[in-house]
Image (tube, rainbow, N blue to C red; front, side, top):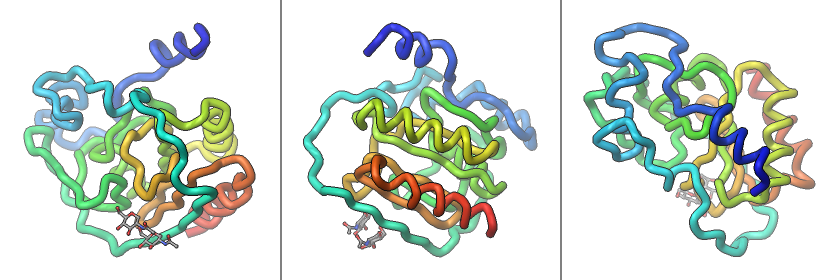
Length: 194
Ligand SMILES: *[C@@H]1O[C@H](CO)[C@@H](O)[C@H](O)[C@H]1NC(C)=O
Ligand SMILES: *[C@@H]1O[C@H](CO)[C@@H](O)[C@H](O)[C@H]1NC(C)=O
């Protein structure tokens, strides 16, 4: 990894602590107790969520799948309660009272970004082992297409996809970004119209 990218990763992105909306400050100040989202007792992030430890060869070639799901009731839970989802990439469901400031994160958990989806944001997830050049394209699509986006690595994408774009109730999974840029931008355009 070159030094500049390392610098960016270390200093320009944060954990998902930024407040967008403050509803019940005493139960979710977005700083204390959020380690619960990454199995931590304290607020230290477990790097398995955002670092690449084992790069496996691609098992599927150019897999692209768009799917929508029924909406799960979005209860708000304080950080004292663990929220578990039936999918590692949920598209709706319970979440924290506060949602993240839009932008890129070193790591942002579903418990936070699900709330942003409810408010019309688009979430861009990439496998930390994905090709750096493809991640760069992914990032530029997010930045150019819309203001309300969350971009974060997510080490447990489904169906061997390396990129997943999540909108409220739906997701687009891809193993390859290059060659599928138009599918991605069309998906975002349609989701913005809804
Ligand atoms: C697309 O994803 C859905 C939900 O995960 C799955 O049920 C379906 O089998 C997938 N379709 C294809 C063609 O892989
Ligand atoms: C995609 O992943 C979901 C969740 O793991 C699974 O239910 C579904 O069957 C998978 N689809 C395919 C086509 O493998």
